Length: 162
Image (cartoon, rainbow, N blue to C red; front, side, top):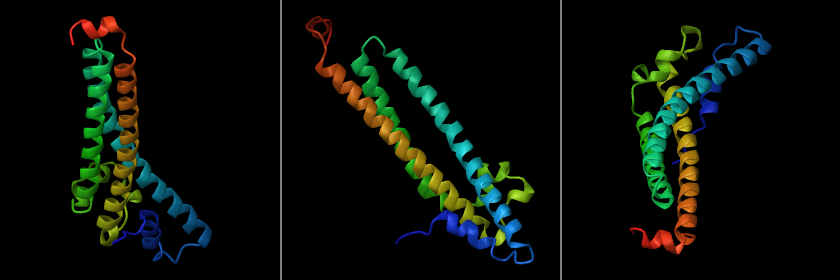
């Protein structure tokens, strides 16, 4: 079952505002839509930044062995991607009033209560999946770097303790 794009849903709840001139409606729709998406993006970006900082600290702790450091970084980044995918599935069912995004939206940027659950869950789902895709690509890059270090280790590194 294919879910509708959140841009369509956000546009659909503005359809009831016929009393505004068309140009003002289009300006308000794009402003509110982009504001909701921007708030969701900033919240997920901040959470991913903290996770990336923790992964970076683990990798620095293993910097004595670059192969192991990038292998751990790739694994932890893949785990972060899995968590983002789970959050995307959870976003459908989570009450919109209990999301961090809803707390950051001002009253004039909040959608009406009748469609707020649907709109906020679709936007959050879209943003979570976007970040999950990016972190999966970063994980793949780290695993490729780990393979590079594995195949191009010098013989002295192979005999030194592994």
